[in-house]
Length: 460
Image (cartoon, rainbow, N blue to C red):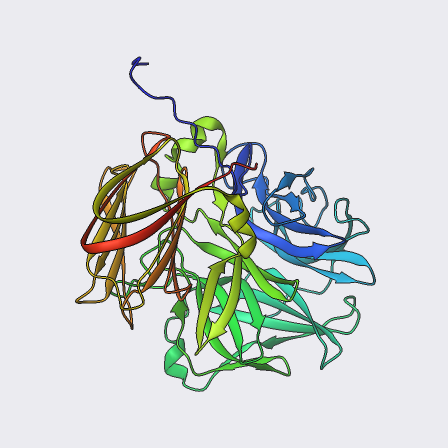
């Protein structure tokens, strides 16, 4: 190795990531017996999409995460080839988790089973097994159960992502009074205008339903959505619709809207705790040529989760904001009034805040010649661009706002960027891989801007 080449440590200080192996979808998010539990898809053996288990992290404050022993291994006939994604609920002082068991039979055909396991303490589980037969009219791509209690119906709903025999994406819903006997399935989504369902894709993954006083929000991750101008440019998408859920049916007149306009956001899951709706997503849904060349593979790990976000709704828009607890990570604060400036920090573990309720003028950021955040005030256009580590080309993601940009909050850590615009109305997540562990930020603007930069603690 060249003596001048810096040895870069890509490990993370406040995000959940695997010390070894591959991480993907967050699973079983819940607050149970004083701990926030985040389970997640994990291949503990290597950085390929095989040998899926449920990894496990827990915290008392949403900041300091401890890694627990693997919660669920693929060790039963109904999940022998993978413990796939699912959710968790508390019932009669026990933790019940629901997941999809993946099985590959002797002919090489994939089978899927919707399964349940139970825990007294949130750390050790007893598997119950499949809870109902596979639905007729659907391929074996039926998975990712999300379960919640409905006080009006005094029972439990279970929502599944599915693929019809005609290779169309759908969502199915089941109902139970006791988590044991299930009625269904029924089609979950009903649109007032069928034209808004023209882009179905071929599979809906990781469905989720958020309940707010004003309305309900359906979140899902459809595969096979065609690129549409500046939208749907990633390998797979995550979208939401606003509507109303009643008697097992979600009714909507709103077309799907991207939940995150960045590069690497997929398969989020929500849970209720402390009077809030909280969520984490997976930062890692990449095209294969990118994924197999991610630099962290040399360190033996791959992919990460987002920071915890609080979700609200306003005028049919899903609002995402970093949880307030993350402010406790701040160790040093610097206020700048600048028009053109270069900031340097010993590491890229930062939070940037700026607001101008009259609307910003044109500005641009460059992080380590690797990540770029630009705003064009005349077009109300924002861009988040990055250097592709696989082919060395600049990739572009952009969004046209429906109002001037007046506020942004930006979390940066090592190889991750989470950008929140206009108090969380628009969010862009991205992975990037600079050639240095330090941070050099070049800022340029038409007018002077007040920028707060916080250096953040490493707590993991």
